[in-house]
Amino acid sequence: MRSRRFKMLAKMLAGGFGVMALATTTACAAPRKAPPAPKVPVLAVEDVTTVELKDRIPPHWLVVNDVVFTHLLDGRAYIVDGDKGEYLGMVPGGHSHVGVQFTPDGSHLLMPGTFFARGSRGERTDVITWFALKDLMPGEEVVIPPKRIQSLPLLSSIPLTDDGRFVLIYNFTPEQSMTVVDAEAKSVVGEFETPGCALAHMTGPRSFMMQCADGSLQSGALDESGKITLGATTQPLFEREDPASDKPVRISASRWLFITFAGAVAEVDNASGTPTPGARWKLTGPGEDAWRPGGLQPYTFHAPSGLLYVLMHQGGPGTHKHPGTEIWVFSVASKQRVARLPIETPSTAIEISKDADPLLYTALFGSGTVVVRKPADASVLRKIEGLGNDISVLQAPPVVPAAGPAK
Amino acid sequence: MRRFDRAAEYLARSAARSTSRRGFIGRLGALVTATGAATLLPVSRVRAEKAAVPIQVQEEGDPNSCDYWRYCAVDGFLCSCCGGSASSCPPGTEPSPITWLGTCRNPADGRNYVISYNDCCGKAACGRCNCSRDEGASPVYQPTTANDLDWCLGTQVGVAYHCSLSVVTGPAD
Image (cartoon, rainbow over all chains, first blue to last red; front, side):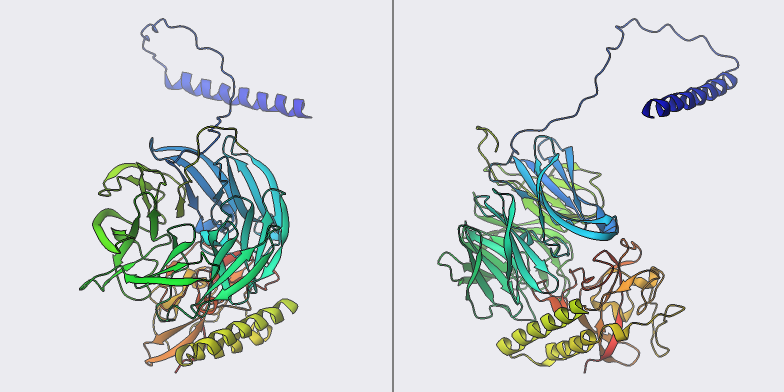
C-alpha cells in the first residue's frame, strides 16, 4: 500500500514538474546565453539527521514558556541560547501550559500537561512527562489525577523538591488538594486535601508553604514516602485590599519574599516548619506611590549577588498585570534600591540566570521576543525573536556540574 | 449534579474560612453572598435562547468594547464578540456553573453591581476581543475573586476555555 502511494505521489510530482517546465519554456521564449557555471566540486549526497543538544543544560540557556492564549490547547516551551541568541528546540505542553521543572542534574525537563482525547474535547488526561534535554523526546511519564489547576502560569503550582525526588501538583476543582508524584519510582504517591490554601513554595527538601484565602500562610511537610502533613498556620499577613502576589520570590532554601500588588514586601522563613514572618519593607520610597510591580513574572532574584530585580510601572489598583517600564534593583540584605533602569520595551516577565556572570532576560506577553540584557544597566545585548504567541514566564536553569553522567 | 454540589460545598467552606478568620463583612460579604446565590442553583439559571440576550435597555455602552462597564474585572475573550453576548454563551458551548465575581459601577445609574464572570466552555479559545482589566481581581489563592483561573469547572464538556461572560447578578450596595 505504501509503495503504491509512493508511486502515485511520484507521478503527481512528475506531472507538476512537467507543467512547470512548460511554463518556464513559454516565459523564456528568447533565452539569453547563460554565463558558464564556475567549476566547483559536485555537492555530496546528504543524510537526514536530527540535532542533539547537550547532556546537561548550561546556565545561559533559557526555557521560554508560551501559553498560546488564543489556542490554549497548544502550550509549549521553547529552549533558547542566551549567549548566542539562538533558538534550539521546543517541548509541547498541552492545554493551559504552566512551565517545566529542571531535574537537579540538569539532564531532563519535567513537563506537567493536560490533553484531551479529541483535541478540545473528549477524555481529559493530565500527565507529567520527562523530556531528556539531549533529544527533547518524550520519555517516561506518570498519569496524574485530571485535576491540575488550569490558570495563567504559576510555577509554584508544579514544584519539584530540591533533591528531585517528588513533584507536587496543585489541584483546583474548585476543591483544593495536592497530588504528589514520586519522581524516582515514576508513580503517584497520593492526593492530599489542602482546604482554603493554594500553591506550594518549597522551603527545604521536604517542606513548603502555601498561601491561604485569608492572607495567612500554611506550612506543609512530606515524609520520606511523599505523604503530606499540613502544619502550622500564621495569622493573616496581608490585607484583602492589597494581597500578596501569588508569585513570591525564593531568596534562600527556606526564605521567601511575598510582595503585594502595591509593592509591600514581607519576608517569611519556614526553616523551623512554622512560617515565621521577618522584615517588612517597601519597594517604593517617598513620592513613588504611583509606582507598582506588575506583569505575569514581575520579579526575579539573583542569589550570588543577593539582588532582586522588579518590573515596575506607574499605575493604580488593578494594574498588577501591567507591563513594567523600568527595572528596579534592590539589595535584599540592605532592603535598599541600588539601581533604577528604564527599559525601551515594556515587559511582563523578567528572569536572570543563576550563575555568577549572569544574563538578564525580559519579555512582553504577545511580543514573541526575549530581550537579553546586561544586568548592570539593562542594556540590550541581543534579541531572540519569533518565539510564538504569548510568552508567559521565563525559566533559567539551575547551575549544574558539567561533569558526570546524566541520570 | 455531584460535581455542582461539591463545588458549592467548597465555596461555602472557603467563604466560611475567610469570614470567620478575618471578620471583614462589607464588600467581600456582599460578594460571598452573591457567590452562593450564583452557585447553589446553577443549572436552573441557564436556559437556551434563539438569539444572544442583549444588554438591558437602561444600560449604556458597547458590549463588544473592552471599555464596557460590566467588564471592569474581566480577563479573557468577550463572548459578545464570539457569537454570544455579555450574558449568553455562543452556540455549542456550556456556561460554567461556578465562577468568580467582581463589582462594577454602572455609569447609567451610578450604582455598583455584582458581576458574575462565568466562562463558556467546551471549545478551543475564541481568540476575539481579548480584554484584561483586572479591577479588584485577586491572586488565585483567593479564588472567589480571581480571574487568572479557568473557571470551566463542573461542566459536562470539560475545561477547554472559549470565552467570558459578564452577567449582572444584582446590586452590590
